[in-house]
Amino acid sequence: MSYALALSNPGSDIDKYLSQVYQIPVLTRDEELELTTEFFETEDVKLAHKLVVAHLRFVVHIAKSYAGYGLPLADIIQEGNVGLLKAVTKFDPNKGVRLVSFAVHWIKAEIHEFILKNWRIVKIATTKAQRKLFFNLRSKKKNTGWLTDEEAKRIAKELDVSVKEVMHMENRLNSADSPFDAPTDEEDSEKAFSPSQYLEDNSFNPEDITEQKNYEDVNHTALLKNISALDKRSQDIIRARWLDDNKITLNELADKYSVSAERIRQIEATAFKKLKTALVHV
Image (tube, helix red, strand yellow):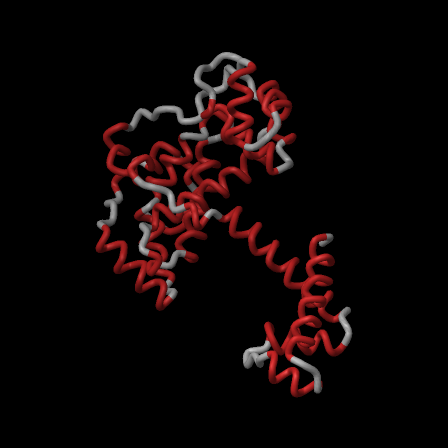
């Protein structure tokens, strides 16, 4: 199978594409480790190609679980393949997890984004709470009927959202939609590669990684800005004690400013109090 077909053109003949995908051998743990380690060290595109192609059936399996959203399967697979490619390029084999456990988050992230942009009912899913509800509400329901008050309260608690938000999303999602984890027909071809056989490694969730990075960037910028607002002596003490590579002691700073070590500690404590107050309002 060509690299172009594998990544960008499942829609040209979806049945033929699926047939080809299921003929590709699944990598053993040792084969995967060898390829991922070599790619991690060399970034050889040919190795990335082998890893991507070997996991295409896994993308198909995930994509089929989103069949209930009324979008073309070929388009969903294509988006999932993009997520798989991103996962391969970011995977670190030294973390001790299988590539598929890492890739599942990137695959789902691309599919989620595609669905949210293209399904008319999901146009309302603009907040984090709404997205969480959209992709989890149906799997949390015990039946295909309307939610009871008790179920709504339980789901709201489990997803950490309000009951009002649960009921609002329930009204937007029609109970006639297909189940979130719809069964597939190709039992034999997928049985050996079902996602249920793998534990997801949640430490690599792209959404959490991005959110954490944004949080750290904002706080780092705010910290530097507010340190600059301190008096020069306080700035020098904070930087010398906590930020510089070669940190110095209270006694060394006391000698520099001809005061006691206790006085340096007091200045440091006052500076930290001002920084904490400023960062709370970031």
